[in-house]
Length: 434
Image (cartoon, rainbow, N blue to C red; front, top):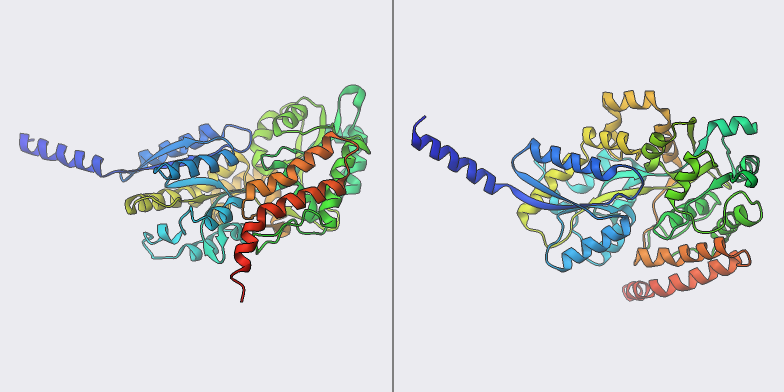
């Protein structure tokens, strides 16, 4: 090869390297497990698979901190091109004009398909509503969850329980059989932290109790002081102080996992996104999962995260974000992520792959979340979602730490605080009414 050819080849390679578009990708690890390591591997594989986009992965902690860090980066002039964002933050981010409509990315689709068409044709119906605001698509689902009931099969057998609880009455009866306070063993634990686990679980219980937690089509209204929410709060407090089957105080997922793995807990309500973690650590007994028990009806809340893109990125970054987004939600990658984590794949075609079919045949527990989709409701999403959510989570914590606190008072106080937080949006939208 002549020197000129070598030089020209080197120049071409150099220009190709310079042409690679670098984008920031923020991602959380909202449930226990090795999600950070696995996502780092996914990013590395993508970067090595092509020469047009360089993804810089930025781990951002939990869902709430991810939102804060993404907003801070955007305000500082370095908006992330793509973020795995809690699915119920999409409304608030869109109302504040912080994220791009997904059509800004999908204009680079080779087939010119709109983001809404892509969403409607490729993703489970239950996950679509949280991706849209006022009929426009602002997010693409990445991983999703529902709460499910985990239980220790050996403890059930020893207590003479032959099936998981189907309703709240059976749950309490089973939990009493499993509880032995002298041995430090509890029948049931539910996470109640104010990092969205408590609010998510409470909303699921509220829907199971026959009501709505919020207005699903208007982001300025919540129903914290409704009979169904008050009943869910009372049920939760009763598990601690009346039925004595759950310890007092605010419980987080790590505490619950530790108690469960050590044989000190019979049942736990947790995200299906924790299935990989629960499966990996339940080695001394048989781990089983079941649908969430009903009260007035079977009901669960969609959880998990979607991919959003912040305003302020360049056209080249939008195209790069589109390329990486469609890679992440491809049936193969989305399915592999589901198998690793326990989240169900929102991309329907993921379940048509040979790998997913083999996985579900090998571990039917992973199909429970899918079975619950017919009873699923969208995740609550409001103006100022985090603050509005914390208004009820803080009151929930008061009920679980103070036996004398009344559920009706907690619900009333939460509603009053939430109404105050929502008032600016309510006033603003009222001005637009005819």
